Every structure is written in C-alpha cells, then in structure tokens.
Image (tube, rainbow, N blue to C red):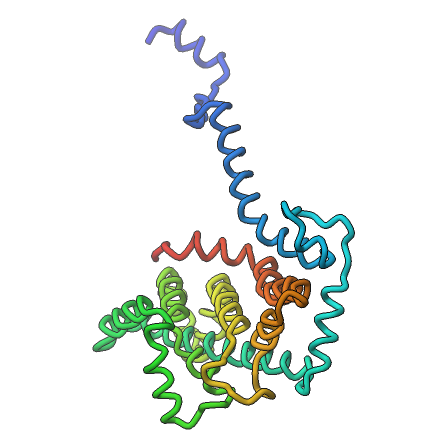
Length: 300
C-alpha cells in the first residue's frame, strides 16, 4: 500500500457498515387486508357475547320482535330482577345454590392444580420406570369425552358411596388429564440446571417445588385454573347430586330456562349470569394464557 493511500485511510474517519434492515415480505395492501381480516374475526368472536347481554336487557316484547334487533330500544334490568325474585321464591335460597357452586369450583380447582403440578414435576424432571408409559396413558385418556366415561365414573363413585355428595364432583376434577398434560409440557422447558443449583444450595424437594418451580410456571397454572373453573362452574352435577340443597347454581338457573315463554326474559338473564364468571377470569388472566401458548414448546 502506498504512503499516500495509507495517509488517506488514517485521516478518513472509520464508519461501520450499516446493517440493512430486513423489510417485511408484504405490501401495504397486504397489511390492510390482514388488519381487516383480524377485525372481522374479532367481531365474529365478540358478537355472541354482545348479543347475549343485549338480549338480557330487552323487555319481553322486544325479545319476540321479528326481525330481531341486536341492541334494545328500551333497555331494562327487569329480567335480572325477575330472575332473583324467582330464585327467592324457591325453598332453597339463591345463596345456597351459589355456595354449592363456589365451594365445588374452588376445592376442585385447588386440588386439580396441586395434584397435576406435583405429578407433572415428577414426570418432567425425573426418570423412573414406567414414567413414559404413564404419560402416554394420560395422553390417551384425553381422547375420551365425558359421555364415554360417564357410566364407569358413576359405577366407581356409587361404589365409593359418594353419590349425592360434593365429592362426586370434586374428586373426579382432581384427576383430569388435561391439567397434568399442560403442566408437564410446560415444566419440560424449565432449565434443569436451575433445580440442581437450588439443591446444591440446600433446598429440599418441597422448597424446590414451591419456591423455584411453581413461580416459574405461573402462566401454565393460571391457564389451568381458567380451564378448571370453566368446567366446574358450568357443571350441572345432576347425574350425581339429587338433593335440592346440594344442587349447583347452573342447575337452578337451567330450570328457570325451562319455564316457558313467560320466562324468556329471565332465560336471557340466566345466560349472562352463567357466563360472566368464566369471562371475568379469562380477562384478568389473558396475558398468562398467551404466554403459556408461546412458551410451552420451548426446551432447555
């Protein structure tokens, strides 16, 4: 290299080559079409909820209007007040139905979460004879719906003497294969080195599980809670529970829906009352569900 060229390079400031940003492989028209499609999908998904709420706020004459209108002309809450009046006339109070549902939902969800999490931790982080075969059995169990297993479940619960008790609904909820499958798949993405480091520091198995594992898989067990609450809250329990004082709120509300034309407004209010709790839980836990879906496939 000549002295003149060398001098020019020394005097010229050095600039790093600019990294070219990768442009998305779609046009502005494609972006607009994508947003329009997403808006349409959102409208389709939200429409049933909006229509159910608006129907519950319609007076009786607007409920039979043809063609039906989406939004009420004269919104009223009479359907809800009539619903609670009807429930108040029952010899079993509304608070009793509500307590039965809340108790079975809370205990069933808590038990399902604890048992599924413990079982998933063992299956995901420990190798033992029969572990893989057991998980395959759990996966196969997910293929069978409640209609297929209804008769065997009834025979087992009857043999245990749990018919017409809360345990007929709570105990089967503990053994739902969906929770074990979800937690196991998520815990497999948890670094094993993190657990080994905690054990080196002197943590026992319970401390590792409750203070290391569970906080790191929070999105998974929040998602599990949502699924469990939805299943138990909407369970009519009429197959196993016969005493009126032990029946669920959903069963009592369902009986009101069978009251004929005169209770059409109350039936619309029933639909809103039944779906409000799962929707509220989903709204507050939406970010956890999305994080679960995004992270469940990651491995260490």
